[in-house]
Amino acid sequence: MNELTIQTKTREMMTYAFSALRQFPKSERFVLAAEIRQCIYKILRLTIVASKRYHKKTTLQDLDVEVTTLRDMVRIALDLRYIDMRRYEIWQRHIAEIGKMVGGWIKSIK
Image (cartoon, rainbow, N blue to C red; front, side):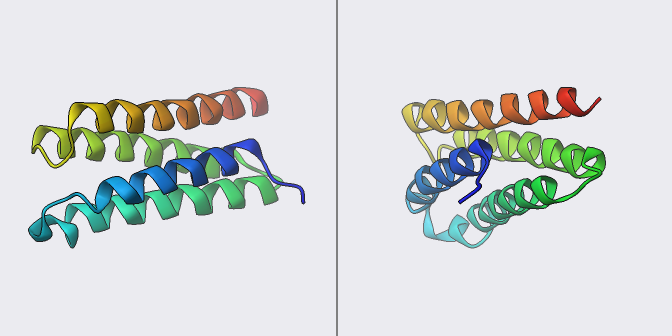
């Protein structure tokens, strides 16, 4: 199976994120948690699309925007105390690793 490392890392982050999202209060599970989940799915989809396209630039830029959006949404969850600092740090490490991979991918196509 020909799979990119970024796809594997994204799935690992998804596994962690979805367990963290279960800790959200019930009132936010269908609002912020749902938005975070959609953002994560979009990141996974964009990694797949970028790996299949010949012209990757705009797809990678969209992927970079989604990673930044996810980073900010997780920060909001911390600020609202839906997750604790330990979960936040682990989650941000996953996001930072994916962000570095996206940044390297963007540099490689320029």
